[in-house]
Length: 557
Ligand SMILES: Cc1cc2nc3c(=O)[nH]c(=O)nc-3n(C[C@H](O)[C@H](O)[C@H](O)COP(=O)(O)OP(=O)(O)OC[C@H]3O[C@@H](n4cnc5c(N)ncnc54)[C@H](O)[C@@H]3O)c2cc1C
Image (cartoon, protein in one colour):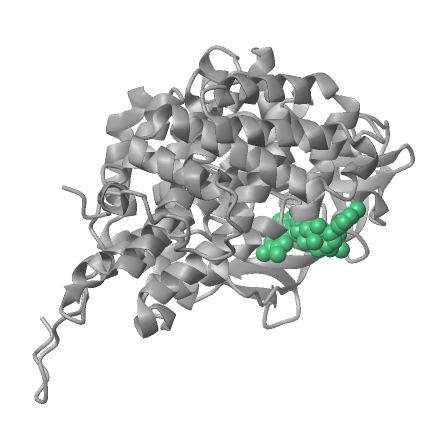
């Protein structure tokens, strides 16, 4: 125990927010998992919530970010090494999340029944992933990519047969060795090049067949990637130009003869946040890779991976928002200012409750989206997934940075220092909006659905219309969106307006149907009541902030 100070006592400071069960202390999460079909995993999620919220795990998160990964390009004698060394805490975080199956659990049925996914699997995984992001967000990158790569691997039977069984074990093996010798593997992806990230068709990396061409064939890949995260992954899904156009490849770190493949890492990015995760610049100096899908089908082939990572961006951002909110409420519950607890100061309770509503909405939207990934055979779920993946990714990831900044302010000066988790969360959150399709790209994706799959958009609008029926303000919001859709000439300019309106309406409808009245009424009144608020703590004069906050408190009895 640290001793007392000689000059003063420490009081009116909160105890650390640690050893809190991230599942049982989070009512919105508990309810979302149950509502969307993951309830039978409650005991397992409770156990993981205890691990992810433990003081030990949070300390590992701090260490993994304070000691970022280091690249070693060559050995002392000039031979290439191309290895990245991580702090042991990073490996422990990976071990915890992979041990929980976050990199593969939704595909577990492939091993026994050959079916792609079991009911509720995405919701259950989302529940644990939401907590893993709170434990430490950077290590979630390889976890997400590994999970999301599986549906792409499945497209080429030869590749699937070899690689899917390696992905499935609930284990983590960080050794730098051929995949066949390892107990578990992780996968990454390389799409972004210097001259084009969003516009991946601008890729200049070339692929030449070794012999035969086409899906499953071996190619030699020459070129670069400007961002390729988790470089110690065992293989990467990579886009390169073959004769027939942009093509998707699986590029392993080791070749079948046990030699190291020609992936030459140039440097690691020095990033704003996400520091525990390595993001490399890499050259492929004649690296071997195997085609997945036919030549020219690169984008349609890899798109399923991208769609899965977008779900994770929304879920992780909602988790990080929850973490920031929990820290803000915890502080306000313990800090006295002008003879009153901060949480009871009217302006502070308005700010905190307003943030809690945003977290409720982000959580509700993310888990509703996860359910649509579980029900791929159901047409309306398919439509929801198609339309609401970019909508949810856009909105949840965009509101997160502002919410975390406000949460930081709730802790005053202590919020701004590195010992508190808020500073790290603040640096972390913007990345979810940038990667896997940034804001405007999400809006463009929604516009693409309207053009090419109008029946999907109609299905979502009908569902939202039915949900909005009982509330005049939601009904009005629905009519407004219908109005936007009926002015297609202006939609290109109004893409973001449309996406935001859809997200808000969907969140409002879910909360109205399922959240306690205090939450639902305050959300609808403050988001659809016509006020022009731009910052937190407005529009809740009539709300039951005490009820909203007692539900959101991490110290809830
Ligand atoms: C930490 C980190 C890790 C990453 N890891 C990986 C990885 O592992 N693998 C990988 O492949 N990539 C990775 N990326 C790259 C990331 O996916 C790209 O940065 C992102 O897709 C944007 O591409 P870009 O940087 O080329 O930006 P640009 O394509 O130049 O886009 C710049 C801006 O323009 C906007 N924009 C683009 N097109 C339009 C349009 N038509 N209309 C309006 N606005 C538009 C975009 O939304 C964006 O805001 C990573 C990025 C980061 C920050």
